[in-house]
Length: 350
Ligand SMILES: [Zn+2]
Ligand SMILES: [Zn+2]
Image (cartoon, rainbow, N blue to C red; front, side):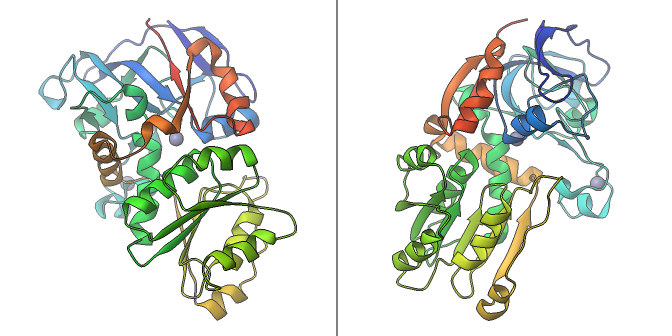
């Protein structure tokens, strides 16, 4: 079969690989759709030390169970369409015991430590099968839309600590696919007002088609800070979510935030430059609460799947492009230009 195999920085050829053979306890999935993650783009452009090549990338997927060697241990049957919680937690450390599998001290992850879903077939490790990490999809919602369950779960993890409600005004900095998902979840949580900020006019144009109250261009002269203040009666928003990997956006977020606001740094900075220069007087005088989030708990993934299946999440408008596997290298410039939100890969058949 053909798969997109990571061999190192800017080397992701679609090449012939062996069809995976199942061992005891494993399940084989025929992948219908696998969305391209911002981390796939980052791995492609800059490499990733956590991934030992050759490795098939792709971890935001939906597919059908075509073979099982798990017997009764699998809670899914051959023929069923499924999504998967892709973190393999140890189940025993303090974080796992507390339900925070994303923080597990010895976690492994699909497409990092096991081959992923930019391929027609992917095998699921026995541990994940017996741990109940495959979830049947019980609606006719397209697999492309269901592939968003993984990134949306990460967004829901962050929202768990933000606790947005009817009294909140929310600014999302970064209008890429993750920013749009944050805005949609904030709205579903009941936020009074939701604005999106970005440096890219193309991204802001796309963002305007979603249920938000407006967009604000981010400019070098800091005019966006004044504009945000104006739109919130001089108070500033009560929640600021940074949905991009820029130190300046993190610094801006503290300046944008209103008094007593919650600020979320979603997503990390590049490992080569992980430091941001922050004016901590904003924390002091405005009594800000700053949180971060990483990956998702299994419960977030389940909530995400349920939300997409409810039809209340705008998955159809977040997937802007679908490409065949052979054209996967076209996904990256589409994402970088801001022309695409989510690009979905159709891996075809083995
Ligand atoms: Zn992802
Ligand atoms: Zn653990």
